[in-house]
Length: 328
Ligand SMILES: C[S@@+](CC[C@H](N)C(=O)[O-])C[C@H]1O[C@@H](n2cnc3c(N)ncnc32)[C@H](O)[C@@H]1O
Image 1 (spheres, rainbow, N blue to C red):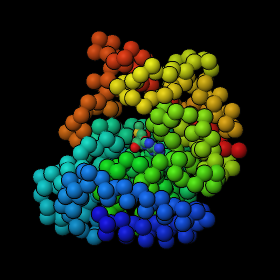
Image 2: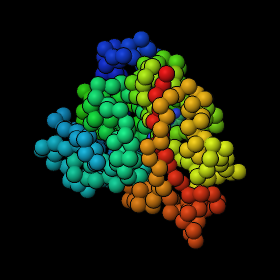
Image 3: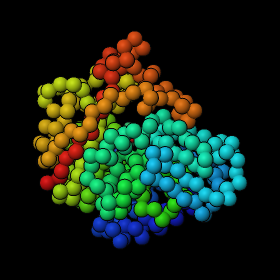
Image 4: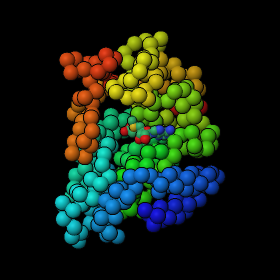
């Protein structure tokens, strides 16, 4: 992994130097180093590494990221499909995708392409933009953003396994302008106002202080830049917000689930304008489900078996909104 990390760091340094983020180059590189120090000490690293290093070594691979399945392919790969599948499964669980690695389909827990379809058609065109994806997971959406012509995509996510998933694709296309910093939102330089688009998808409800999160996001956007916010919502007016007493859909770390109206009010109070909800969707057990690639519990286990409109705790089942807003 050290070899991958070192190559990726060199590429990141060169890219940052020539980008809109040049002023913060040293800080970003230091965060990259901090994040990788944690990954390299992780208790499961040996298992993940054994899979990563068993994958084909080819230098001549092509990555396709403008289709629903983000795929890597190359001529002359002689490893069997069974061998590649076994290697990839050393990095179980695979949550966000789908990916195709030399013909092996990684059927992830989430159909993240469905979320992208709901989001992509409404957002400002990404061509030429510098983009931040907060809580990027495996980087699936980062590839799709690059597929839409973004100039540079920076993802941040502190979960070490997701950096391994990102590296699994990135190693085959080191020159692509997509970089994952293995850190959380609170680590990155605040108030820099350097991104044209900032995505926060599936993050807000995990934050104990949602208004602080929105203000942080605003501080990262240039004036006129676009926030793409995707989060859990409930039905109701601007006075409605669910704060679960304990778990929500078995998750311990869900704090605030506002109505769309309340979310719009929060955004307005945080200084955003041109705020509009462009999509609302109830998450289905076809979009989030257990597969061979994610063998733990999934949405079907988090819902009331007798009433799928409720979580197992009796709260409204997951419904998600996409809200766009402009930073002033
Ligand atoms: C529900 S997932 C959303 C993933 C992806 N954005 C999507 O919409 O499919 C939440 C992600 O946030 C990441 N995360 C957790 N704490 C974070 C933090 N402090 N800053 C940024 N990301 C964080 C998790 O590792 C996880 O990948």
